[in-house]
Length: 247
Image 1 (cartoon, one colour):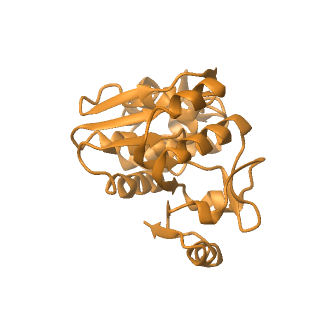
Image 2 (cartoon, rainbow, N blue to C red):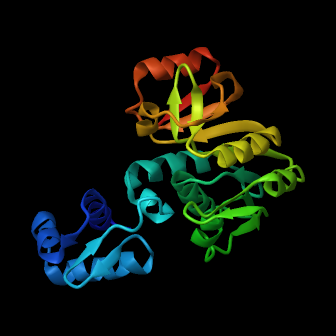
Image 3 (tube, one colour):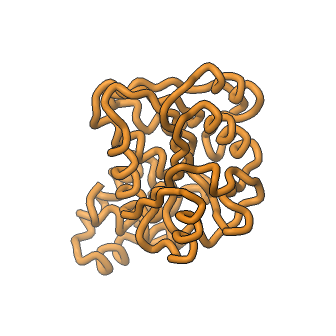
C-alpha cells in the first residue's frame, strides 16, 4: 500500500461518502489513477466503491480499523516484529496493529503464530513463511475473533516466550482496558502462557478507557507505541518497570 492509498483511506474514513473527483483534486492525481486505487483497495476489503466514489466499510469492521493511522500502526508492527527471532512461536491477540505485525513476521523464517483472530489468519493467508494455529471458540462476527471458555482452554496448550496484545484504552487509574469483556478474558489467558507480555498500540488509545480491565501496568513487560504518547503516561509506565518503546 503506497502513501497515496493510505491518504485515500484516511479521507474515506473521515466521511460517509466521497467521490472520485474530490479525491482526485485533493491528492493531485488523475481520476483514472484514483479509480485504480479504489479498485485495489476494495479488492483488499479496505473500502466499498459505489458509482463515482467510495465509502467506508462498517464502523466496527477490522479492515476499517486497519486503515485508521495505518502508517503509525505499520511502524509499531515493524518494531514489534524486530523482537521476534526466526523459528519462534508467538501468541498474537486480535487487533489491527497485530494484523500488521503478523504480516511483518511473514518476512522472517519459520515463524508460528498462535492466534484467536480469524481476521489475522485470513490477512496473512498468502504468506508461506508463517504457520498459523487458529484457536477455537465462539466467533464474534464484527471483530472476527474467537472468544469464550473453549478459546481459553485451547490457549493453555501453548507455552511461548512472547505474547502480543492490542488494547482499546489506558489510564493511570484503570491500567490497560478493552471494549469487550470476552476479548479481555482471552487476552489474560494468553498472557498466562507467555514469558513476556508486550502491548502494541498507537498513542490515541491513551486517551480512551474501555469497559473491561486487561492488565495493570506492573503486569506488562513492554509497551510499543508511537512518539505522541503523553510524557506523563510514559513516565508512569516506566516507573512501574514497563519498558516503553516509541517509534
